[in-house]
Image: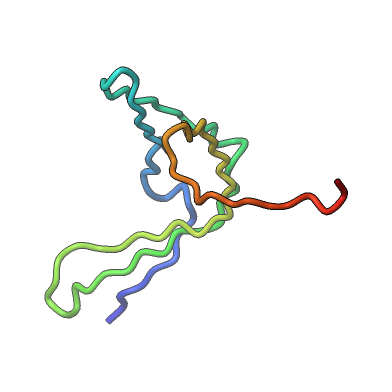
Length: 93
């Protein structure tokens, strides 16, 4: 019985990619949403669909086999980060 099938990427529904980020300002949580531009980040190859139906189990696993580049960045508030104290002597003085 066949339990793995390789399909072209456009043979199944493809969800949009979202990145959710949360930050706090004045003790209030703010959520930022970034929608990635698919044309700039992905090049599709294939989709692998695996199921355990032959074992009597329901459901399937879908793997999108494509290279992707996602670039994310964030600002960090390091004012309250505890650093170990280090004292270095200056040998040039």
